[in-house]
Length: 334
Image (cartoon, rainbow, N blue to C red; front, side):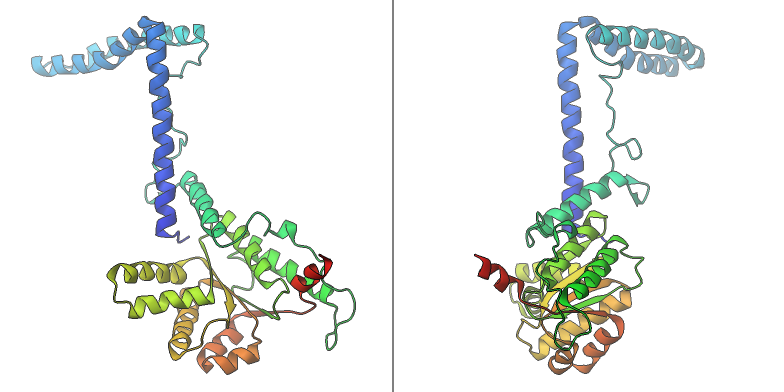
C-alpha cells in the first residue's frame, strides 16, 4: 500500500504525540504516588541504581559480576513484590508505574523491522479519511445511505431495463469493487451518464470504503488534477512547482485514484497528453482508477486522442447511468 507522504507524516506525528501523552501521564502518576508514599520512590531508586553500581564495582575490581547479580536478582524480586503491594493498597494495578506501550507488537515505533505495524496503518487510514473529507461529505456519502427511490421502476426508452434495475446492478458492482478492492475482477471503472444520476455519490462511496480498508486513495476533480499537471510543467515559482510535483506523484502512486467529472476541463493538447500519461502510467504500474464523466465512450473518442480512448475502452469496465436528474427531482419536491 502506497501511503501518501503527507498522510504518513501526520499519522507518525500522532503516534509520537500519543506516546508522549502516555509517558507524561505515567510520570504525573509517579510523582503523585511518590508524594503519597515515599517508600515507592525509594524502591524505584533501588531498582534503577543497584544493578549499575554492582556492574561498575566489579569492572573496577576485575571480578566476575555473576554472583553479585544473582543476589541482586533475589533482592529485586523482593522489591518488586513490595512495590506491587504498595500500589494495590493505593488502588492501582502492579504495573501502574511501568512504561507500557500501547502496541506491544512494535513498542509504539510504528514499524516492525521494515514492515509498517498495524497501529500505524490504522492511523494512516484515519488520516486518509480526513483528507478525503476535505473534498467529500463523507458523513452521508456511504453505501449505507445510497437510495434507489430516485430511480424509476418504469421502462426507460431504448433500454432493456428500468433505471432502478440498472442502478441495483451498478450499486452491487461498485459495492463489491470497494469491499474486494485489489481482488475484484475489474481493476478500473468508467462511470458515464448525464449529470445528476449518482456517479459522484457512488465514486465517493467507493473512496470511503477503500480508504477505510487501509488503501491509499486520492480523489480529485479533472479540473483540479490537470491544473496541477500544468503547474508542475509551466510554473515559474519554485515553491508552487514543488507542491504541484507532490500532488502529481500522489495521482500516479496511490492505490486508487478517483477522477471525477472528466470532460469538464478545457481540452487542450497539454490536457490530452497529461490524461494519456496518467491513464497509461497507472495501467503500467497496475494501479486502480475510477473515472466518472458526463461523456459517453464515443464522446471520449471524439474529445481525446485515440491512444487514451483505446486504453479506456480496453482496460476499464464501463458503467452506464441513466434515468431522471436526481437534483431536479429533489428541487421539485421543495
